Length: 245
Image 1 (cartoon, rainbow, N blue to C red):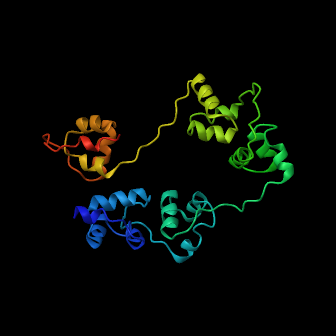
Image 2: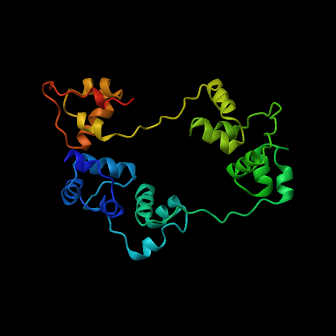
Image 3: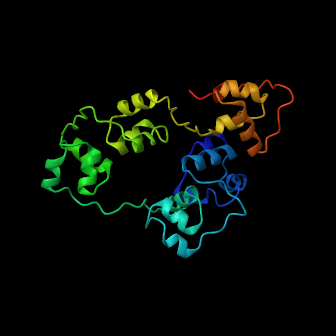
């Protein structure tokens, strides 16, 4: 069975993920349940639930025709399930048609901040940054550019590099100003690996939390979500390998 589970997943097998319980998919494909769960998590396919509303042909026809968040709101679904359905159907994410930069726009690059240039020519900040980098044009020096209130309101809402991209500033400048304002960095959620989930219930939650470097609350919540009973007595199972490196 171990050698069987190491074989690559086929496109036909991937299409089965999330369409029925992992245990049933594992039985159909002759794979371990942990292998099915791990593959489904890597492809961002949500777990099967019998109460989930099935997709109609009309809804599927809209996949990829607009941003996942916009379509999810229109259909009354979550962004996660909408994106997962789009990927399962082999649809690419929506991108507005890209128009080429004109010589006039190229001459503006680096003369002001990327944020200002983006607003002037009606493009995204990331598009301006990528074009400037492609042409080897250094960014405009901020020259002591002051922080505006709406810029400071964005600090700590996303990763520093994402905020920097939106504001046309460097990640170092954003990080320095966030710390100056004593604003904490956003909490980043770490995904659970199949090995970590196998460790749940094999030791008391406090011990598992130490081994996996997670909070006791997170361990307990994940264990209850998976329907795993609380460990009464420590087992001799070796689970140190489950610790993320």
